[in-house]
Amino acid sequence: MKNEGLLKLEWAKEHMPILKMLEKDFAKRKPFKGINIALSIHLEAKTANLSLLLRSGGANIFVTGSNPLSTQDDVVSALIEKGMTVFAHHGESEKEYWENRNKTLDIKPQIIVDDGGDLVYLVHKKRKELLKGIIGANEETTTGVIRDKALEKAGKLKFPVIAVNNAKCKHFFDNKYGTGQSTWDGIMRTTNITVAGKTVVVSGYGWVGKGIAMRAKGLGAKVVVTEVDPISAMEAYMDGFDIREMKDAAKIGDIFVTGTGNTNVIDSRHFELLKDGAILANAGHFDVEVKMDDLKKIAKSHREVRKNITEYTLPNGRRAYVLGEGRLVNLACADGHPIEIMDLSFAVQALAAEYIVKNKLENKVYDVPDEIDQKVADAFLDSYEIKIDKLTKEQINYLTKPH
Image (cartoon, rainbow, N blue to C red; front, side):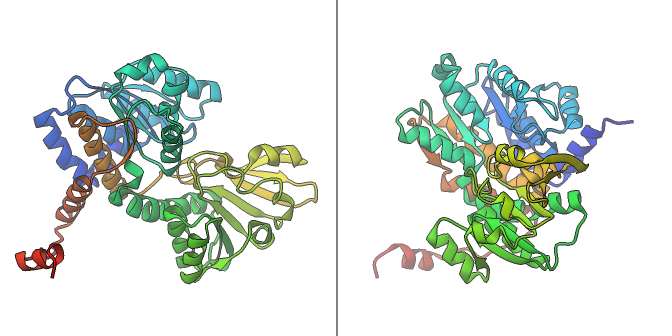
């Protein structure tokens, strides 16, 4: 019987036409020949194919997972069978999590591919002896970009970082369509309840929140959005959603989904306002949006009532249900973004890593160059045999010259 993880890799690759195209190109050109890459990302079949793509380009790679609950052990086994060095297993303790990060950095990377900013943070804070050898890093998530920009603003960023998250082919599709679908996949797969007719509270109306709210509406839910940014709140209102402060939304929500990239979105100010049976899920990268420490302190008792569902009984006798320990629900409770969405994101990752190798960059956070976005978009359309119009010379002149 073939390793189940290998079958997962094959299935994912079959639906990743852009990565397959890049793999052929990289295998010929070897753009990463002799380059050491430390890769920290949610370790499942799609990301396994990213690591294999980078290796096909000549890279030496150490891999770890960016979340203890998103690592799939059969995929780890499959990568090891393919000769990869992997430091990760599902359900790591906090200590094991950071030990595996440090082991990944023992490759003495020249490039870091990061998801959430932990490797970049670790190098700057604890592994400073590695800084001289690093030529740059990629960051996959909003959360990680925020952390990297904070280092840049403080004048402490010691190598360039490309904000892969900010690529059009990433945040327009991955954050909106990927998170929108996969968050509800995780919630519905785990709870097995109906969404239609329920009140769903979505915290944050960035690209992640837009996708989650859009899909909730499509499933028949009544959607409430909480925001701190007036422009985003205005957009949510004009998209047809109810806008409330969390203290008011807490009283009426049946399902809560946080996706802000910030901390303490639902905390001790809100827990005892919740309806009996309220479900709490987090779609942000780190498990800080639902303040689990506060919930554990005030709860009279807690128990696991179903896989990935923990029931907390509050002092007022009401019960709140937390999915996936408050971690990233689409990966803690499901398989993450749809394959075709990650084909786009990981194509951007791979090409951004090549851009770092080819260009001498300053120590700051860069957006993905437009030519990479265009190349990935063209490849996507080609893979689906979609044809679009091209500008004529007359049209180009009209757009670019005074008239």
